[in-house]
Image: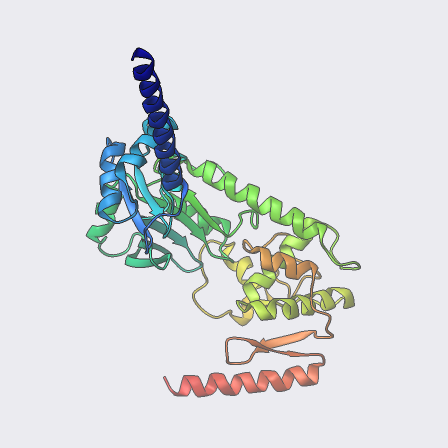
Length: 385
């Protein structure tokens, strides 16, 4: 009898262990398999939250099939205590394992509100944007210029939220002075800038920052990125260019950047200046003359005067030979590449064509015809004002 009871108990235990093992395997499968979420969501994890609250939120939004499995697996992986506060993008079909990794790893928000400070050539604009999880596009909520007009309430509201992200974006062609002045006006940052960075040595790009970041540290990031771009562009340069150093490449790239905003034209504009340098012709480019007047401190805000075109400055390429002594702005990588990989042309002239682009010419006669056309366009526009 006792042997029969023992045998039955052993059988029940084995069956129980087998079933338990099956349950564990099923739970693991549920944890690692793709989830039921059909449209991406932005999951907000508030400070002081825990896995129980998070799992309930995910269940309510249809992102996970079992809050219990979610919590047990997170505990088993020793990740429950690593939960981070923030706003996290949960993509459609994300597994529970992927969601746990997302909310316990770096703690950097991947969706929600972003405040961007865009430093442009003529203004610095602040934009409050929300990421739409369904399209992964940012939707603008508010926009205003720093130091001008009333600040929208939503800006102060979002600045008070712990998971708001911040970004500083530099447009191509801004000067170092413009960048530093803009950074000074961003109250999010701290620290005084002791020295103006060298012209051309700050990379136009987008930089994520945190409240309290030091302005000098932000500038160092910009310098490091630009130096890497300079090195890469110089390493890949064409043979036989009239450029003797990375510094000369940077100067030429800054001129190209200020002469055209059309990507398709950069190679042609570069070819004009390279051809002029090779032929010993003066560069005769207005942006360098403007830099000689402003020293990069703001925009000129008017046309150049004849006296300014004749005035001798180190940057007046109507007067000096070759390149000016310094860059005239901070060029983007595309302009750096154009400077060392110009199009193969015989162009030595170009002038605006009225469409936002330029008309290029190989001879002075052809150029004069292009100039005449441009003056007709200007006259028509002025007569319509």
